[in-house]
Image 1 (cartoon, helix red, strand yellow):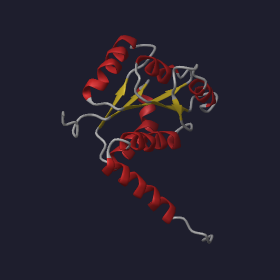
Image 2 (cartoon, one colour):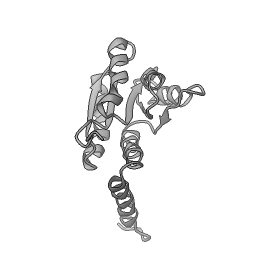
Image 3 (cartoon, helix red, strand yellow):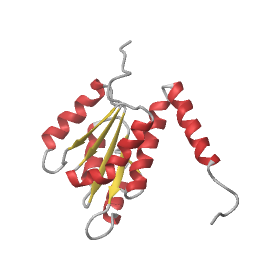
Amino acid sequence: MTDISNKIQAAIIMGSQSDWEIMKNAAMVLEEFNIPHEAKVISAHRRLPYLTQYVQEASNRGVKVFITGAGVAAALPGVVAAMTPLPVLGVPLPGKFLDGLDALLSIVQMPAGIPVGTLAVGTAGAKNAALLAVSIIGVSDPSLHKKIADWREAQVAKLSDTPKD
């Protein structure tokens, strides 16, 4: 069995550099759980040959899940999903005109047979995509599964039944 403990397990892809402001939140969550990951700016429209090569080689490098951020036409998540059987999580990014509603509708309406797990628009979506990626990877890693379960319990423990000023 090959040791993949240091191999990239999650790949974060976004269409442009400006998307990093939101997508870095996914990276921060993955870092919190010590998930080896990488982030790439690869436009589905402008760099399709590179995207194709990157996605097709990803599983050989240990990638188990893709987190994709896209705005406006939001083609990136669907294009990645069309190229791989690995889980693809789509984060709709807010744009100039419709605050991410256009991206949300584009990602969530993937045709049957090309699934993309669609998250919330923006920062909450990026964080939740990473948490979902941790859960997906944790299915085959008992210690990571326990770590995410403990993290969720800690989130609940922070809640209070009494409002505070």
